[in-house]
Length: 491
Picture 1 (cartoon, one colour):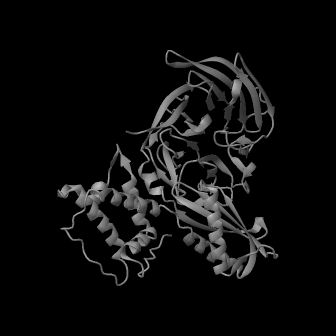
Picture 2 (cartoon, one colour; picture 1 turned 135 degrees about the vertical axis):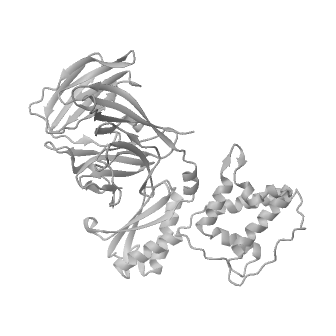
Picture 3 (cartoon, one colour; picture 1 turned 45 degrees about the vertical axis):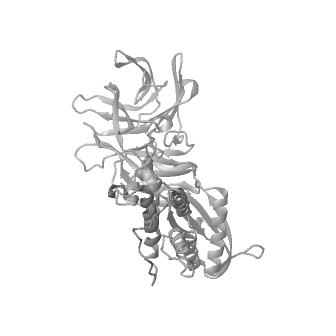
């Protein structure tokens, strides 16, 4: 999206160089990112620019770096020829701090985001849909940008639309409404325009621009290690496990026929209390279930066509009824619910209250949310074997990505981004779990693969997303086992 536009040859050489750098390509922005990155109080990449190993003094190195900085963009200008660096030129130590200040100033200027390029692209795409007309413009912010930046984007859009023949009306009647939503992910700002008065039939147009801090963000992300902690094992199927405290000392376990409290004693989890569910109708084949523990150890248990409520404080209690209540998606904190098929083992796609404009989705087995401030991207493992990405406005299908049916969103404490734990596709010989990060809506593995002896039957995030619970049947023992999966930073 960034294009080198050069500098005005009428300017002085130094002014031309500064303009060239402010308008330079993304590759030079990354060079400045390297200068800004620090480790242990020292600039890691300084030797790349200053050449300390050549034995010249710091003063000469600073001046050589400055001249090299000025010459590089100028060399790309048409017909521009400038004198080479004079090796005998001396720079006093008094001027060296000023040179470094100039470098820092130019580096800061390189981080200023140019909204003109994406605004022009979006305006041209909009005008190709609407033709010359009068419209109303709404700009909604779902990113970390401040109010001033959004207002600048709005002004730039109005100007770019006018240049493309689309005028934003203030008082006269408008033929249609343009709604632009500014969102973001780890590496890009994403602009989505809805063109049309009828929102149900609106045309969606996308443009994106690289975030200035994305290179620094990616470089500083530490690698992750996926760890497994064994929790419990029993002969009957396990649907979900939830902690009743700050750790695994007391666990609430939901099964196909009952619910139980397990306590850790001498390194082993043993049941201390249990109750039967007392269901009116048998559960479908390959049933699934979900546990959500609230304050004061009250909990909700979700099963196909059944909802249960109870407490696990002084004593264990439970009350179940046949109702098709929607299940919480993710860890339950996002307030998004999906209806689960009472006779099958998947979500129907109906969402409550919905993801922004999106009130429904294709049927899916599991869902996970990538959180970035107020912005959230939902990933659904669809019945069609593909990943469906929903951001509240549009749906994107990752047809080339093949995962298993179980996914869960987790957050490693040592990283700022969220990760997705995903099981292996059915065609692999053994089941496994691998952690992914989503950069620019593309999954990238960030951990080692953790293999299992049996097929994973459930993968649910814990409350807060610090870990996930995986349930599988061990073919060697015939028992059902529940383990906790968490991500730690590798050092």
